[in-house]
Image (cartoon, rainbow, N blue to C red; front, side, top):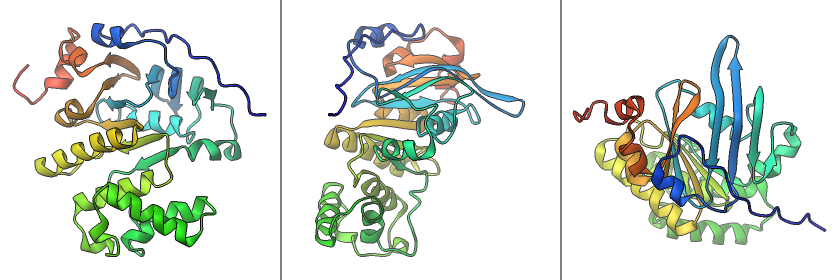
Length: 274
């Protein structure tokens, strides 16, 4: 028999959480939880005691300066890096001691949308989206075709299903990447700097796509971003990484009203509102 599910627990409210987020904290089991996570590369300490909870069915945006360790956090969550110290709990399990084979079923519960979609140029749109199903499942060709057609309809790319990747725009490639990321019905979807290199119109379209996907599929979403306008359009929760730790965590309103000068500077730098 499968083990009984762990009982829900009251998550401790981090000291950096703002008042609005603190009121929102209640009884829930974090989908992902980092506890005092440290990571050093050579002599460079990147993570210096990261504490972070990712709430279920929310959009959490991780912000921070270039080289602050945002991607390092994601690689720990995916089990690609192992913490030097601390715990990385994913779906209730500390994955730090797990081996490569033990990580496979856990990674299959994640979807990833890469910065530039990372589509395979040798495959058309249909084949790109079907690729994870062919690699990870034993579905028949008919079942795969039905699943791809369904997901294309839901993310509004049906008309381009048999085009080559060179025939579609960058914004359309993002939607194809999204379709491929969610075709396996993951429980967590991760976006890596999704608005980098996009003009304001395309950035808004990507933001809309992130929100629509979360609402449509009720999926826990983690976004890495340095784009403040985009962050405040999509986030339910924001975690700011600074000097190897989570400096601030809370709702957009919490961070906007933060009295911490570093938080204020990062959010409003370049806006003329400092």
